Each structure stands twice: as C-alpha cells, then as structure tokens.
Amino acid sequence: MILAIGGLIFGILLGSFFPWSLPVAYAKLSSIALLASLDSVFGGIRSGMEDKFDNAIFISGFFTNALLAAFLVYVGDRLGIDLYYVALLAFGLRIFQNLAIIRWNIMKKH
Amino acid sequence: MLSMKQGRWSIAFVCMVLGFMLAVQFRSTQDAKNNISYQRVEELSARLLDTEKERDALQEEINSIKNSQETNASAEQRLKELRVRSGLTALEGPGVIVTIDDSKIASKAGENQNLYIIHDDDLLRVINELRAAGAEAISVNGQRLIASSEIRCAGPTLSVNNVRSAAPFEIRALGDTQTLVNALKMRGGVAETLKVWGIQLDIKEASALQIPAYKGASQYKYARPVKEDAS
Image (cartoon, rainbow over all chains, first blue to last red):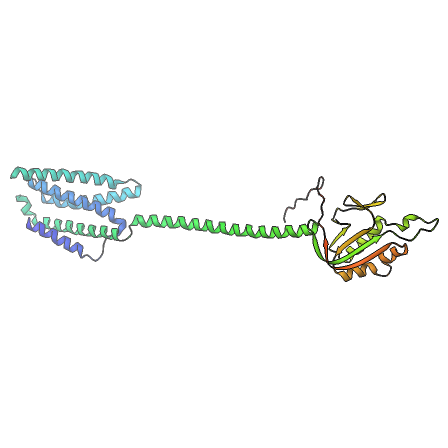
C-alpha cells in the first residue's frame, strides 16, 4: 500500500516537472485515457477488497482500457461521432459504482 | 489482499503512471486555462474573419459613396453649365447694346415703304453677325434668344419667343466688346447696309451688361433623346 502511494506521489512529481505538456488538441484523448485509468485503478482496488485481484488482468486492463478509450474517442472524432461523452458517461458511472462498493466494503470491515 | 502483495511493484508502477498522467493532465488544463483555449482561438479567428469582411464591405461602401458624391458634384457642375448654355440663367458681363429703330427718313414717292422699316431679316442679320463674332448670349427686347427662339414678322411687330414687341429693338449681346462692335461696323457690314435705308442703328459698348434668362417653358413632345449604348 505504501509502495502504491509512493508510486503515485513519484508519478505526480515526475509529471509536474515533465518538460512538455500535452497539446490542447489532444486534451480530450488524454483526459479520457486518464478516466479509463482511474476506472481501472478503482476496479483493481475493489477486486482487491473482494479478494479477486489478478495482477495480469489489472495491468493489462489498465493500459488497454486507457489506450482503447483514447483510440475510440479519436476515431469517433474523425467519424463525427462524439464517443467522448459516451466514454465519459460509461467510465464515470463505473468509477462511482466502484467507489460505492469500496466504501461499502470498508464500512463492512469496520 | 494476498494477491495484491504479489504484484506490488506492478501496482506501484501503475500508480506512478496514473500520477504522471494526472499531473500532465492537470498541467495541460492549467495551460489551456491560462492561454486562450483552442476553441476560443477558433472562435476569435472566425470573429476576426467576420470583422475583416465587414470592414471590407464598409470600405467598399465608403468608396461607392465617395464616387457617387463625385458624380453628384460633377453632375451639378454639368447641370449649371447646361443651364447657362440653354439660356435658363441670367448672365452678365461685358458686351454691346445695339438699338435699332425704324427709319426717320421720309420715303420717296413710289418707293417701297417696307425698305424703311425694320424687318425680321434685318434683325436676323444683326444677330447672325453678333453670333459670328462670338456673342455668348443675346437678348432682343428683353427676350433671351435660345436654341428654339424665333424672330419673325408679326404684322407691324416682331415676335421673339412668341412675345411681340415693336420698334425700337434693343439687342444685347455678351462677348468681346471690340470684336462685336467691329463685326457690326465692318465695311459692307450690317450697319452700313441698314444705314442706306436710314434705319437707325446705335451701338453702345457696355462693361457690365445683364441679359435675362429665358422665361418661357419648353417641352419636348416629339423629340426623344437617342439612347446611347456606350457612353
């Protein structure tokens, strides 16, 4: 757990001092990738709490979800279909669902 | 929880990636807020384009208004000139006053009395001579001669512009005084010819002469201007 938080802080520091920032045109894609990653992480925490955590699934899900989400939004943008909002809604709903379950699990434990 | 410990390094890595993404995203959003955002730029450029178009349209309007003003001014100028030429304005300037009266000489018996009174052709000859000498405006007994003016005998009187008047006739002409006087007085000229019959012809030079405007109405019932294809 400490390792995970340490990794998070290190990542934030790394990102803060990263020499270049994303072009504004790709902000949409990176934000949806970020949302997908958050969803994966919350999903991972939830599965870990339910003792169903699988490292391979977690890692692969984290990266493929993020990349796939960004790719789909990009393709949708090219085709004139705003998949951005669809992804936003789907990931957002899942994040809040997972958060609710995590909260429920924590409450049950104590 | 056990399986989580197995992949703690991988989890740490994932968390690092997540943190990195978060930070980058945060910074990009801040940048976007600080700078003018992409959409804002697009909106502004569209607005700029619109404004430029509007400016161009206004510039064109200004040009056309300026042009029309110029043509208005020149049209007014032309109208004035045409009014002067057509005799619709009173004019003044140097010129001569020619007074012609019937002969005081008693006609001899058996001679045609008509020779001793003024006829339309006498006046026409005088006026013709004046015009040839460059008279710019001519009036007969206060009647301005215009392009359609007639001079003809109407019984014992003369009709000019359909207004009848009797002798003596006063012809006013604007132009170079010396030239006008010389034209009338030249040898074998009008004055000499008329004097033979005793017709009194008096030429007075005037430095400031006024000639009235044409007072009648003129309408064109039959004549129409020819349409010019290319002006």
